[in-house]
Image (cartoon, rainbow, N blue to C red; front, side, top):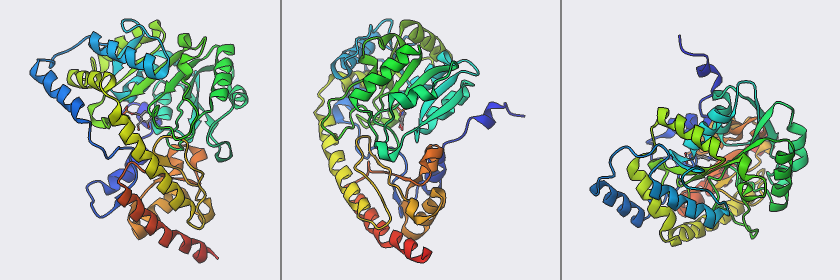
Length: 389
Ligand SMILES: Cc1ncc(COP(=O)(O)O)c(C=O)c1O
């Protein structure tokens, strides 16, 4: 009796694993991308103040103007993108809110959308929801989970409407180098396609290369929707707040659609976001230092395990080791690890067909938990090789 889209829009495979262990305190949960930090105090204070001052009502569908102005300031400062807060920027319910709206207003049924595989599970789901045709572009381990302008060009047809970019990438941590990003932008201009730039992990970079945002490149502003999420950067996953910038006709259409779906993101979260993006940024720097340490620990620990191959992830907060040496489907390995070690990971195939043979471990958990999980994996995983002999 339900509509067909229930069948063709898949559920999240991450949640499938997460829901198996939710509420259990006896496991080492490394599934969902949920920073273990609390939202910084000054952001929480701003939200409390907002409640007391009466920011408890509907706002403009694109968000309060002062909040849009704060985001415009942040996006210019951090991302090098100039956006008019009145016509080219809107607040959304997290990055997810922007992703789904952008797909709905840009993609017609039958339009092809190129997306990274392995990639964030909702990218595929949103393309399907908009009745687009998902066309995957493989992020290969040997290319450090980036892709080239030539690979993009080969995936483009006359039906291509949009490219989804997510750099740093979830689940691989891959970052598209600046030089390649510029070449990718040129291909998008040549073929006149839109870009949906998912900048959810914009701050989580561990290399020395200066970040370059595709929406800031010449000729890209008029074809790029860049979305920014506060979830990971400020440990605000539950606040459901983010913002996006894009061509004015796209932002106008997204704002119109947002009205019919959530009206606007929660007013209190908007005020909290204002404090987050224009307030002191030292809280972000501190969190990032911790993430860098954890990334080093998990990389060293995992790559020392017999059968595991892992290069240091360039960004985000996930390790995506190659575990194909164990000769099992990644889903079966996840279940085995849960049973034998209580370490909860996500199968690479949850992130697309090119994720098979890998596991994702989220290291946004305490160093002690990472170390204990590593020790359990180190004890157990090599036994699989010996049993296979
Ligand atoms: C790549 C990517 N984009 C977007 C999101 C959505 O984030 P939120 O809606 O919490 O801002 C996530 C969440 O995990 C993600 O990993």
